[in-house]
Length: 67
Image 1: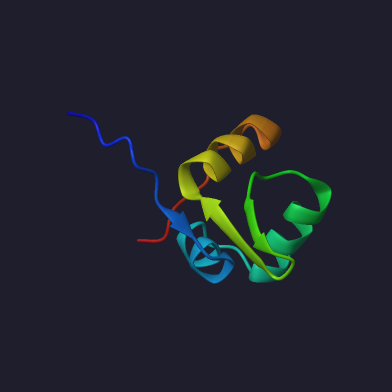
Image 2: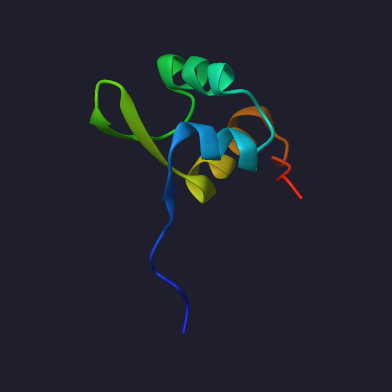
């Protein structure tokens, strides 16, 4: 049985997972390059898989994950 629940993470955790800075994630959000769920004006949650897919589609590369 496939897991249908997607993990949502905060910006700092996303930046650690995909090896980029939180400021870069802020820029991507502002430009509309990655999907997010706005909980409040200062708190966004991200689905890691959807972000990786959006970046792969936009830039044509697979996002490397932290080891």
